Image 1 (cartoon, rainbow, N blue to C red):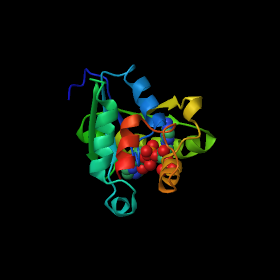
Image 2: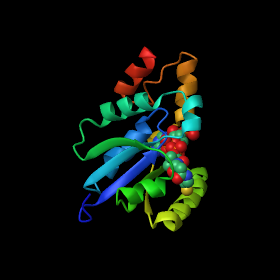
Image 3: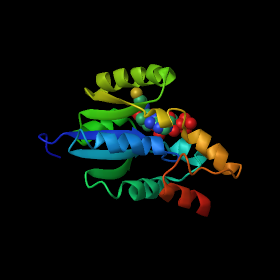
Image 4: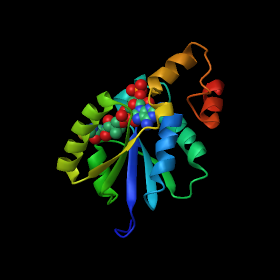
Length: 161
Ligand code: COA
């Protein structure tokens, strides 16, 4: 990828992607030329995760179809190493609250030391600051409505599941 383009990587577990994640994507495409949305694939977690890697990719592709700047992919291993392989210098992360800041600060520092990767933080929209993937999974498992937390494409896939 060209060094002249402002390419950013938005890594995550996306189990499943939520309206909060989509809001971060919508805002990130305003500040970069290409946004790589990448599912971090942890083979151990894959066994315990609710959605398979294929399902996560399908959901992310469906909800980002309208953004020409977005590419959806996945990776194994360290985020910093993946970013380096792709010659990406910027990560995008959303922060929802002070607890997120603490963990994100640690990850951002590690990624800077591991691969000279800078992390750009976007504050989560207050409408989604309490939304989390585990909350969505719990509501879905118990048969509740998740329409207020996920894009319609994701809701359809979860209903199918
Ligand atoms: N809106 C809604 N939810 C959000 C959110 C937002 N803006 N930002 C974070 N979340 C929630 C998710 O819903 C999820 O909730 P859950 O814990 O209830 O499931 C949680 O925050 C985290 O999810 P997500 O942002 O999808 O991914 P993550 O924080 O699990 O991703 C990685 C972390 C993948 C970036 C990190 O673990 C990583 O880099 N892994 C690769 C290995 C590595 O390099 N490790 C060393 C890092 S220094």
